[in-house]
Image (cartoon, rainbow, N blue to C red; front, side, top):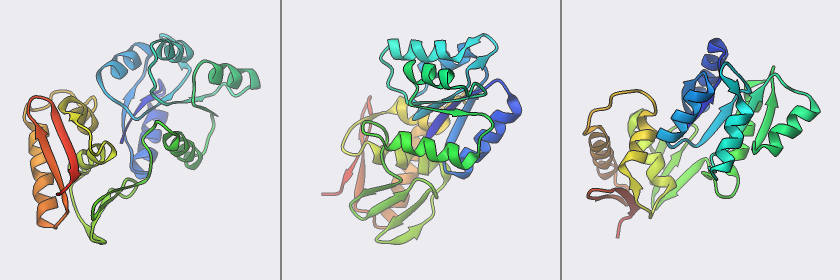
Length: 224
């Protein structure tokens, strides 16, 4: 699951990204309101962690803009503004949650998990289909209750397809989920990781199938 961290303090953003990585999340980091808008427009994120004191504007303006555009992206505000009125303003501007600095990483992760469990969001730590179970926190898969090992990139593909099982996932969404803002990506990179994942699942007896919808994307379903 890929998150966007919007924070102009480089050291803090690195610490947050490391803490989220330990909890099983991948993150992209940007340091300004302009970069946040560009990132949200180009990558499909599961949630955003948003600082308010940005060098080119107030983070609340980014939040209000997202909500005016009917963007449903879950947003957790993480800021030094911890007063009652600040919290009220943040929540009324469209934040899903509000956490003041300084904070404990454990609480940040717990609040983030609570946001993602809400109806309409990406539900669940354990994703299941037929005899396949994927633990999103440990990034481990189980087939017929037996643990199997796959690469981090293959796990990213598996996660997005499982979360949208039975529906077509556009290739661009899969690419965003795997690579985020990493820059240049080989044109066949998604196909390579999907192929590797298919092979792993077949070899281990998973009763699932990944369909390629030519020119559109991929669909994961139970094997008939």
